[in-house]
Image (cartoon, rainbow, N blue to C red; front, side, top):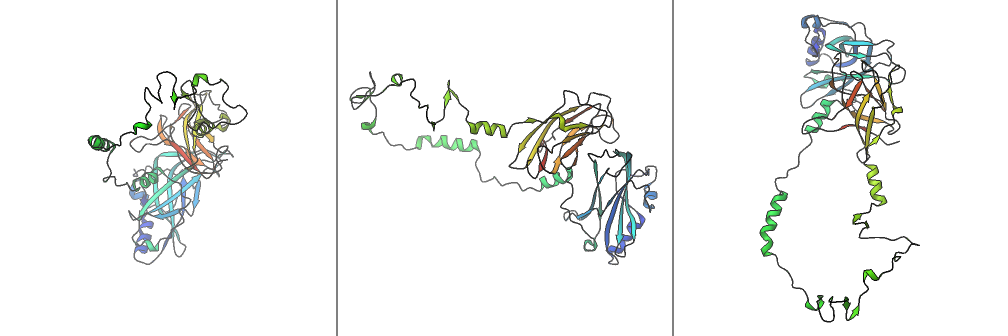
Length: 386
């Protein structure tokens, strides 16, 4: 039985690598094939002997080819969609094809999937996508044709690596809050002060006293109780520079309300949540979003519930086009359907244009947050708001 989920280099692929490393040829990766071909019962040796993949339901030409300068690995990545599928397909085999500088194309590597990804037939509205990556090591990297990686989809692995590379600030030279408090306490008895000018201090008797009616230079002050009830000028705006309270509680300003509104969670209208034909949303469906326009980030939370609790492999599309113009990246983990499992699994929503696609289990999909010290809410990034 073939080793699952591992890129196996074919015999012809190995021969091409040897020619590249010896300087006899250059290599470019021409296409990646997604196929329903079942090779799971073949041995690794038999997989290495393959020279063709058939049928080829999804073909991605000119896959993204990049070099990881840290590991020395060449990464070939392709994102296939179901836009040309008239019927649903279980993808069981992935094939990477390569060409030498004479244009001769060979089957370079093969990956066998024991839990095939399911591509439903294209519904004409929302395409679904699956990203496949193959890693290989070629010593003579100057003989590899690399492609522009600006449009490569970001994977969870990419995010983890990027976060790990963020330099941590050196705080060894700074005092902690507790240390500062202790130093201040130790200095209290050494702090100097200037005595008050007695001529400017209010006394209980004399020219400036508060024994009866408060006076200044023997002139009585106007008491608050003596002020008219309509003292505030109603015909013009009043600027309360020290703040305004009602019943001892601060009154919210227009700026305060605007700030609260900008950072609030809002509920997405269910007309933008579309299940596959023949299925309907339950009233308990609720998708919440919060906008952080300073970082062009849209945070997501909530659950999708179908009225049919036996719904199996039923895609549900969440449309964000009423909020953002274009989605750049997405990291939206949720509890739902993965591969051929019929139980809950931690998976990521697929991204296309301004849409996210979820596949519930037993009619339910629940957006989650990642765990651990680096855990974060589900989010997408965008270019600009609508």
